[in-house]
Length: 485
Image (tube, rainbow, N blue to C red; front, top):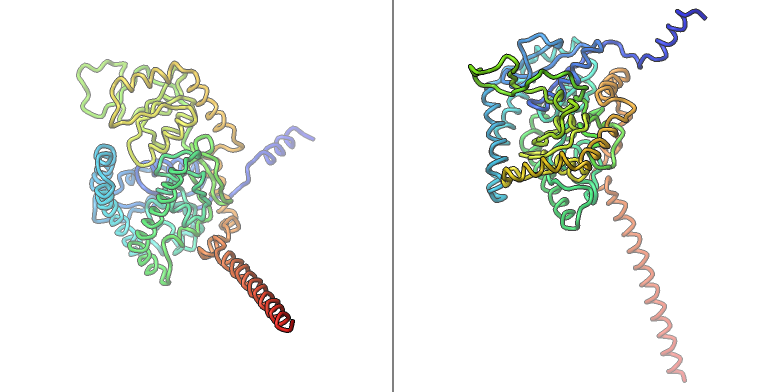
């Protein structure tokens, strides 16, 4: 066999499963959610796929005026980029500084006000999208292969249904994992699976399990209430038949969940849930001599060897061999970069999922966690000294790092594989469980339990009646015999 033939065979046998360059429609969310999905988009473009991103005129995240390798379709909305930034700033500021000092009723009312504003923005965007009949017709003619969506901005799944496309969900989490459980049918036993939002581990006390169950009930009610009052009517009108938000989301072919077992606790899963935490992580690049994050005016005294960054290259810093610790707020992206590079952490969680994230790292022995609103400078110094000088933190984070790297396929490669899998096979409905088609009482086998209880009750009733009849018959015979004697 010639050397050329051998080379050809090696090339063919080592090549990944091929997929013809396809067309992918993307409906992203904003801020850090966009950063996660952007990594996937970039990799899809590298692999030769054509990507079209649908966004709106007020987006603070998606660049709509630069050529970045993907097409952009912009939906005009009556609010501005600054409106969205202001909402996020108010939400973050309130959650960090005011929420810890208010009672549950006050907090719920204020959070509801902020959520109502963001929900209204999303409703307007959804209505504006489907008012663009010209765009919908254009996309039908383009014959996309799959739609990638983040349900933090609703209507991507509805767009997929209108265009008759298989769709893939990219998601970090929802409070109480309500969307994953109610719409995706992800099993979440509250006895040992801590839901997002409570900061618990998989070792819960009795009281924590009580709180967990109550929290799940509350989140289920809130999710169902918001879906029913805000979204179900829109989905029904657009589809032209009765449908719901949750039913539509549940038709996803694949769920790409941004977590993995280096960070998360073991839990039951489903075939169409793929855990790809850390997909954005990459090897570090060499650093410049001096780093300074600064976004103000350039100082006159700035030395030539100092560079200014609106955002410092965090990944490259964490990958530097002299980096000893990482002081972090506990965001998902930074946390996974620390795991990737094996850097122990001092956590100052501020809001949303950050307390959960840092509690995960604390229980795994890879971080010290501080209360941002109560700590003093001495607490931060002591925590940092402990993390740097106590070798157990470095050992534990390196163990997690080895777990992260010891996968048959890199997280980003896995995410892209499943997108291409859906493209090759025109969907992945064979991975969706039958639970989507069951009623709640069928899912929990309550009808079976009621039937078995009925049979048991009937058997007991017959048994008692039979015993009673036999007893009465024997008693009558004894009485008759005594009378004869």
